[in-house]
Amino acid sequence: MKITKINIKKEKPDFSKLGFGKYFTDHMLVTDYANGKWSELQIVPYDRFSVAPCMASLHYGQGIFEGLKAYKTDNGTTTLFRPLDNLERMNRSAQRLCMPQIDVKIVSDGIKELLKIDEDWIPSLPGTSLYIRPTMIATEEVLGVHPSKSYKFFVILSPVGSYYANGLAPTKILVEQEYVRAPIGGTGATKCMGNYAASLLAGEKANRKGYDQALWLDVDHKYVEEVGAMNIFFVIDGIVKTPALVGSILPGITRDSVLKLLKKNGIPAEETRILISEVYDAYRAGTLTEAFGSGTAAVISPVGVLGYRGEDLIINKNKIGPISKQLYDELTGIQYARIKDEFGWVQYLK
Ligand SMILES: Cc1ncc(COP(=O)(O)O)c(C=O)c1O
Image 1 (spheres, rainbow, N blue to C red):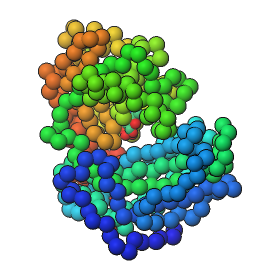
Image 2: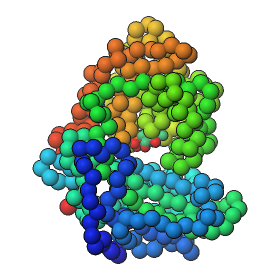
Image 3: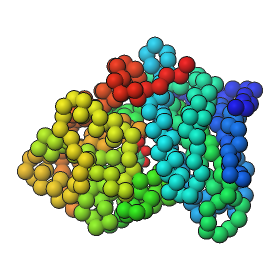
Image 4: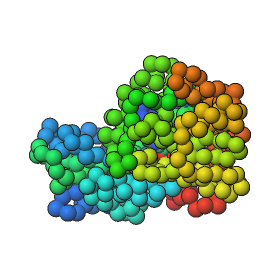
């Protein structure tokens, strides 16, 4: 790996006021793909790219990314949560978008080297972490709809604040009844850039109506899918239910971790198709006791209000439920190495 270090370090932001995705560290990881192979990984100063206006990804959206985090533990070590799962998911996204595979081992080693160089950027205040954004874009300089022959892969790092300014607070979510995110057979199960562009309008609509995010339904507006950047869970009749991976939703790594923790804790859980009418009926019958989202950014995000057909369903009195709280504490406990990791999810930066 070639490493070019920055000469003068950038001034760090106030780590108590980070927000999300606003600041970037001193270095980044880059490699280019041409003639059927990737070049040697390089760590270079974080800087702008110069790109051609005709570059393929700017026109046809051939671009994918990932999102994972590094955490500073109480004793000063750095952990990564399930990094290989993110890179393997990136390869599945790449396959769907006709983009080249990355070598998961080489790239994860590269990310660890990058983290070591920029380790002083990993914030240590409660709830803060370093967000890691691997990205791949098509770089061929020609117009025309076909898979690009060249690509750039890069990893940038951003210190991020606690998702919850005032602790683990419930969110307000609007069931989206007009737009759809992804059909089965589409790109919904990948982290391709276009999925996020296509989701913006529903997000804006939800915000305008006073909700934090939209809850997507399937193409027939019958089955529950997922939230903007989170998978969704409902606790109905004491069973934790989450939509099955039918091909239109992202297989979240937090979702998978939640299912494994529920199993370990002996809490009944099901991956199944969930009708939105079933959620509504359970609410009316008083058997919908909790709802929460899962994702890298927020870990666990309790849903306090679900807007459905002009009605606000208030779940668990708009308070954090016991299962959401337990999962949040366990997951963050494992990520920050405060509790034992029985699953082999955590990797340490040595
Ligand atoms: C559309 C979507 N669904 C779900 C998730 C949650 O996935 P993960 O738990 O891997 O962060 C994300 C975030 O990556 C997402 O963008």
